[in-house]
Length: 332
Image: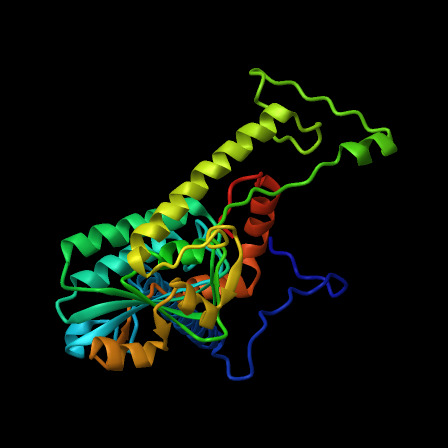
């Protein structure tokens, strides 16, 4: 026996349809379009990441090989004068460090097209270790390539460690107003014992080894430590003097003031035999070396390093270096 639906019961809701009745087709089209757009976006991002990787690889190669599109390959320009620039303090980083100067020296000497090497120096001095390493390499290369001479051209200043390096050259050329000399060694620091006493600060220093607290700025300076430091400075000073005497030879008009740490104008330096004459890189290349074309062999800082420094990446490293730096000899 069948039941007749009652009028008071709710009727079943009919299925919702789109006006055209093809909702399945519209849904499929939307899915297809969404998939296509997603693949296009993924392809665009893939291209972006690939290009970024290629740019990073290019910058890395640029930094590693120091590409120079102005012509750093002597074979492209024929006979030429090789130029290497040393700017700023002579230290374990920068254009005056041995790690930067020595590869450039080797490249310049070994190039069959280079006639001679010019070091353009603008430095107040710095580390006697770095200067000594560069001098030793110059002397070694001069023995290996006796037909190639080394010239120094001084810009503003060539003092202490800068002149330490310059003394190894065959000839030195300056401007009459350049600052030249300062053949001496120093070790500087500070003593805070008086300040600590006034502030009521007690220094608590424990060492294993009676001289481990040597030149501690927060402890009184003993006569023994002072004498030892002075002896070490005198030894390094004599090394400096030996390089100058060997490099300048009979041209040096030595006086009691020559190795006293004083410095002089370029004009006075020529009179004293600390320099040979006046000139620039261009005049030395043209008139002395007779190879007017100048090729720069300086290991310039790569683009990635410049970008990092621009955004302050070197600030933290410099601060840490300053905090950890202790008293050490300096030819400046």
